[in-house]
Length: 490
Image (cartoon, rainbow, N blue to C red; front, side):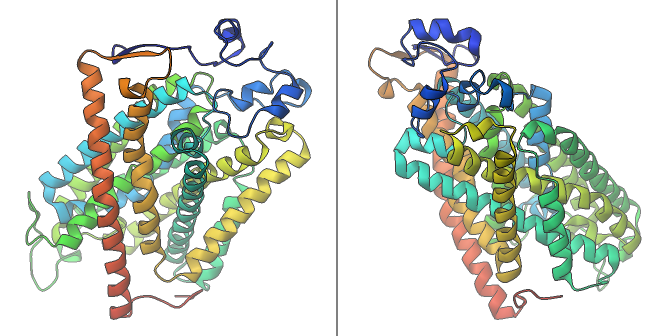
């Protein structure tokens, strides 16, 4: 893919050994790199040319946290823990709504497209090393309001993910304990444990936990697949109607199809963290290898789990799928899934928390400080976000539908639409800067442009459909009386 587009422009700073070439090209206007503490203090908060982590390396030598420490395997583990989580066990219900063929095509197609858009983001990052998160990308593309809106979207999405994991963890503990205490206490326990496990500011420190998370969800999936395959059909069958699966949807309902497609799109919502994870790698370009592992693994797991359990359960599949099994199996699967619920929620929420942290301390030495003030600031951000996640999850009866609204407005654009815009800004000749030569040459130029256009169109379509699905879900919930009151023990 290296011959995607022929263009001439100064390469970005990655590490100190590149500074001489960078200064010779006049790219930054500093006499040394990393710049001095005085220079760091004068870097605008919306500077996109200077990596603020590397810029403080020498000035803060005695009090420096090297955030850029991840290799590509570590980064791949962290991204995989975010992408492959409890949502994998909702895929059988997606296959039920789309049919076997539709489920496979939609999952593979959207998964591959999400990897292509991540590739586009990484190329953009390599050209603008100061882009530390999606809000920075929004600032570069659309100005200060783009930065503010996308930053707010990152925080809202991260808190939504945290709240979703609070609810999932509460359900898991309810199942494991047979509703031993009021479920609100279980939700509070999940929140507290998540805060305690989130005290490390570096994504690299989450790699061992990420490995554990991925292992546990794969075990939970395998337990569920085997259990649904060997259990008697009578466990699921109702009124003597045998289990059946179909290659295509039977009597498809618009709401069901929309819901299934948006669920797949949201399952690949980990792209929101691509800039954040790249920014903590020794070589951000290596994240192309990291995310290949993540997306390939996600596609394979989602297809296997969705297809096999749909065949075994047919029209009786539920979400999450291990609720289809007998109680002993369900308890065993939930015990493993609980580990993933905790860790995956931490990774997801930390993406939004890191945006707040970097945005707040970008011009301060606290950004890379080992000191107590910097660590307390991080814990305060984490604490506030987890409290917000807990309160919103327990307070709003239609929280899942609210999360769908947030995902429709932001997730689909983080994973697809905005990446298409980024490609045009970063690669298309029309947006070339003064003195920069870009040419559309070769297969990959046109391939990526086609993917960029497809991503934008997809996002334009999914946003209103997702909003419609969420609003209809809220209406149905209130009409059927299925929503509980705030802070319900049920």
